[in-house]
Image 1 (cartoon, rainbow, N blue to C red):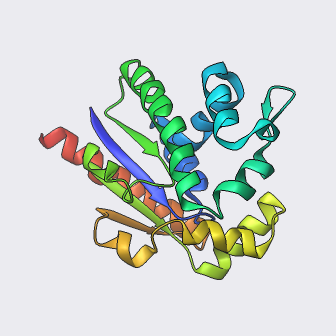
Image 2 (cartoon, rainbow, N blue to C red):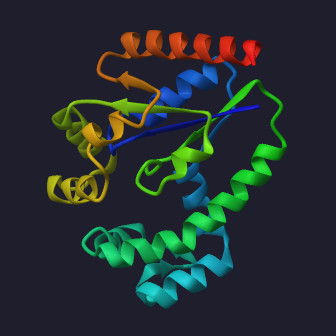
Length: 197
């Protein structure tokens, strides 16, 4: 089975692109969604996060996401420690999911792929890009957060220029129909490569 890593900065439209692959019947694992679900449901993760960030991190046994974000996106060390709690749990969850798949290829979508060297675990990587202002406007609409908070999160991720050199495919996600054509093209290439291998 071919494994494809899909990534892009905040607001690039990774989830929109993932949906397009799903429409082509490609199984997609969204690491950020899995991380959120595990934060909601795992008592072990809850204990570790409270130990790291304090009682305020959870309210009624659910994560206080705005409090957690306000702590970690201003402090790289705390962010790394939080990721050190969540990422190994997501990795185990992904392996369980992967064992149940039987498609020609799967997509693993994650915000951070190149930064931690995880791209080496995939046969191909796809980078989703969009102009910075477009990305900011998308996140403002979606998350009801401030421009400053979005830029703080952007600063914790590599810029597209750094990622482009490592990606096998780049999807410029500005116009929806154009993006769809790029997805169809990449899908054809991967299916062809599976036949030839």
